[in-house]
Amino acid sequence: MTFTRPRFLPGLALFLLSAPALGVGSAAAADGLHLRWNDCPAGASPASIATFACDTDAGSHELLCSLTSAQPIDSVLGVDIVVDLQYSGPILPDWWHFEFGGCRFGQLVADDNFAGHAGCTDLWGGQAAGGLLSYTVGMPHGGANQARIQVAFSVLPALQKTINTTDVYQVARIVMSNGGTASCAGCSGSVCLVLNSITVRRPPRPVGAPGADVVITAPGSGNGNWVGWQMLNVASCQAVPVRNRTWGEVKALYR
Image (cartoon, rainbow, N blue to C red; front, side, top):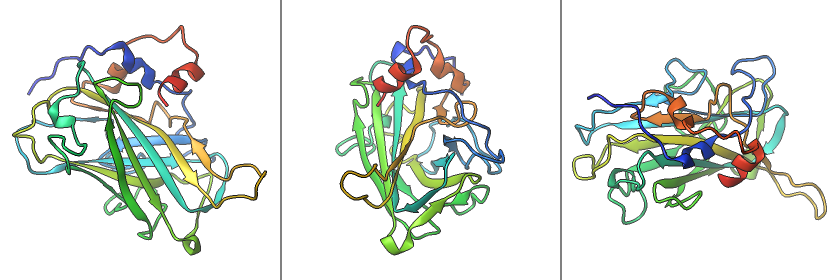
């Protein structure tokens, strides 16, 4: 199947986040978010673009969410993850309706199973509980062609984890099944997805002390927190210039 370059709406420019972080695998990492199809960014086969012939209900597609940190983070109890998506047309089609009552409800899940993805560090070691929290159409900016995926994982206090400044940590796997493709239209349309934030949860501090949670929003190297679906390249997501907006203004609009 041949796909033409999508013509995106101006809202897609709002996916742009702050300046790129240092490259994956550098001696000392910067804060950075990484989103890739098939594998983590330091794995054997990560991809920024996914294509699918939309000709079967069998099989699935994996999105790997990873992070790096510029500072060590101890006492990690869990993470909250936000992934936003936007369709190339004005209205999200049935194929992308994973919410309750949607055409493909139940075909989107999240877990911490990183079997076969050994290129990055598994933060949880099979000890986390959690998964998909919500899928909300219309977020984050009220568009009928937008949706927000929210995922959370946590461990018991006795199993607190530590994040160092050198490893790339896998924190979640989002699995999008092909189920319902035959009956839910819109699979072949182009979509941009961006890992907008990961909040690292830590134990609460005494009243008046600085907050314990760490919020990472910076994209990994080369806009590493972006992926595309049925697109020529991820750069298509950035088709509309944002010269008149500061990075801070852009980020504020998409939170």
